[in-house]
Figure: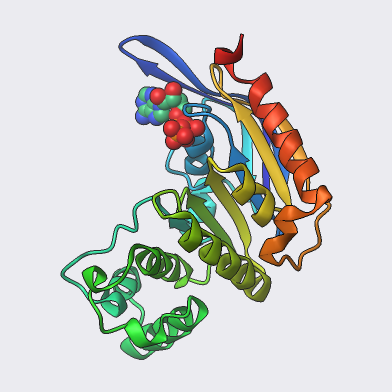
Length: 256
Ligand SMILES: Nc1ncnc2c1ncn2[C@@H]1O[C@H](COP(=O)(O)OP(=O)(O)OP(=O)(O)O)[C@@H](O)[C@H]1O
């Protein structure tokens, strides 16, 4: 679904070049749930932005569903969920989800059908007529996920969507996201700083390190697709978490 070969991205700044991505090789299959984890500045967001054609790599190749990222974007291959829910406060949840559909020229009946479907997917069917400020932070993030799903894109890119939420809410959203992923069979790219979140959610965990931003480990998870929250106490889970932690330590300059 997504294939990066020797991908480089160097930003030219007033303080000299910043090597945000260097020699990144990665293949992501259809229907995989891939997490990107690593310290601040290792290029996680930059890599997602390259996939979404929001940044242009300076070297290497990147294909999405056999197309260039730009072609894939025009074919509406992605939905993107940001760290902050980014909902317009003056629009109801329904109207927030409708906005990109309106811009793309979907008919009113098609919009209504899609809005109902995605609200159901994120379990917010009774909240379409509410305004964002009437919803909790976790519900706002779910609304933001619904908006990203409205196009029915094959790929969902999520940049630390639950980073600002408390742990109990986050656990619940993690469970819901796994359930949604199983039902929709989307390919998901997910940025996180949390080791348990990465291990709980992913079929593949990509560990990155900064200066230059690169991949230091790719872990294919042996955990089953069906994952109750208490899987986090099993030896298999803890073993993967250890490996991620070791990878993060190895790439961390502060440990020297
Ligand atoms: N538009 C830009 N211009 C110049 N430098 C940039 C730009 N965007 C990102 N960078 C730099 O590229 C590097 C990678 O940034 P990126 O945001 O991808 O890291 P990250 O791993 O997502 O970090 P965080 O966990 O803090 O979000 C950083 O050093 C950052 O300062």
